[in-house]
Amino acid sequence: NELIWDIEEVKQKLSWLILKENGLISLHCYYTGLYQLVKAVYPNKNIDPWELKNSEVPNGTWEYESNRINSVKWLVEKSGCEFNKVDRRTFGKYGLSKLLSKYYCDSSKKAIIGAFPEVQDTPQIREIF
Image (cartoon, rainbow, N blue to C red; front, side, top):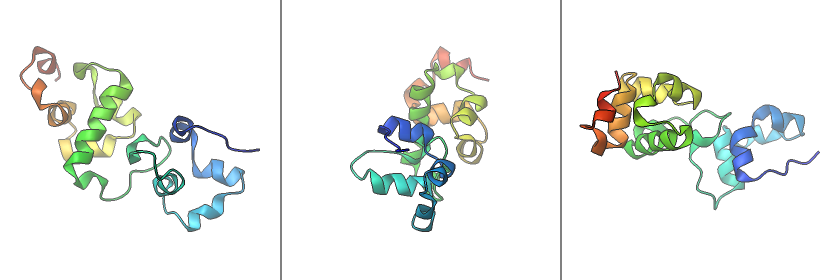
């Protein structure tokens, strides 16, 4: 049984369990996380760690403001939600709960404004509690 997936399927489906079921668990000896493995296999693809559904974001990722901003922008795009509809559940659904709690005091409004400062004084953002 071959794993013939495009990059979007890899982002959604890849897990250590899948690798184990396909006799590839030994890769865990060489790569501490799925993100490192995916980057090694797809060196020319622009993949961010928060895009992998079944992988933890590597330590230190959120220390860079650019990663925090890019992940919130990705979340808004991926969820298809209007700014005022993005809440803690949305962050949780897309694996960004730790980011929200640690860097934005559990406030989706602060995260949205951090990524999209231009919306700070709009009626749409004022609707967020």
